[in-house]
Length: 306
Image 1 (cartoon, rainbow, N blue to C red):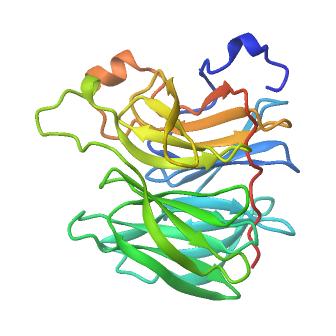
Image 2 (image 1 turned 45 degrees about the horizontal axis):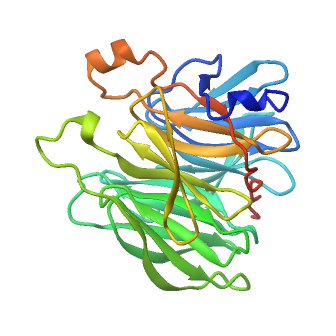
């Protein structure tokens, strides 16, 4: 939507595609000029070409939790049962490595490649207590546990220099920053980047700011966080200060990515699974992929190497 008027900045509209139960992991493929995203509980991988308005989907028996483009073609799919190499043209997939956890209690969640092509993917510990989820790195054919002590791993993104890794724990309402050595992917100096108030038991959703889900970083190094149940996106400066709030027409945004040729369109996945009937009645775009123009371009997607 690169021809949209600047007067329409930050005005969200849905893509003309079927809604997801829980849309996640959107990325813009520059070579294909197409958007990919997952519907995790729906077991579906989606692809949409804005130029032709063509939508295609692939259905799986196992949940596709996150997706990244592969250098040389194809996709890397993080599914509950492992990491897979997937060929969209043939529909064939090949197992790269089995998942390292008890699949009855845990699954992969947010996953992305870093600028060097290493694929990072966190997990979600579905019983929620204790904090047994972790962050893994797939590199040179090996899956290595890099960090832990979280419940719902989310919010993966890198600074423009590639030297800061952002990582959130949605349940804890916490975004963390870690120093990353680009040469070997080692992590250090884990610290709080942003902490948000927890939701109290009797708090109305209208008075709740949400909790940090998926994220993206723009060319100025600012971090865009989708605030689940907060009905908004936040743009945070590299020091964690909130610079902008963008209100959305749905309660549960899950993740944003930058797309279109100029990388000045935000595509935002959302959720409708397990939402109250009265909320869905007033928010028909729940589960849609929203599209809105922004004034600062984002960073392009990183391609994974296997």
